[in-house]
Image (cartoon, rainbow, N blue to C red; front, top):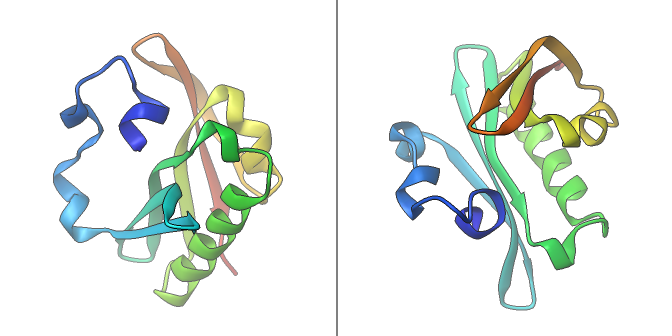
Length: 122
């Protein structure tokens, strides 16, 4: 699903990272279909989430928001004091609703603009 939602023009291996086996992977299921996924990686007291994708026909229904809320709670439970992500610039407002703030300058992955976003986890 990540491949078809995030990078449909790339090979499936493009969405895989070496650290996948070390991460925590969460999903939202509707009926018997996986409709949203996110991966959480911890390093010391810092967490990072990556590869957050929701099927287009399931967006704007609260599914991704519920999954991200769960992931933030899990990061806290696992001992993280901060969490960050590289967000597509067009999605920055979504992450700001969760208290995340843009950090640094815009950058690109191929033609797609990104921003780094961070949040403290009290």
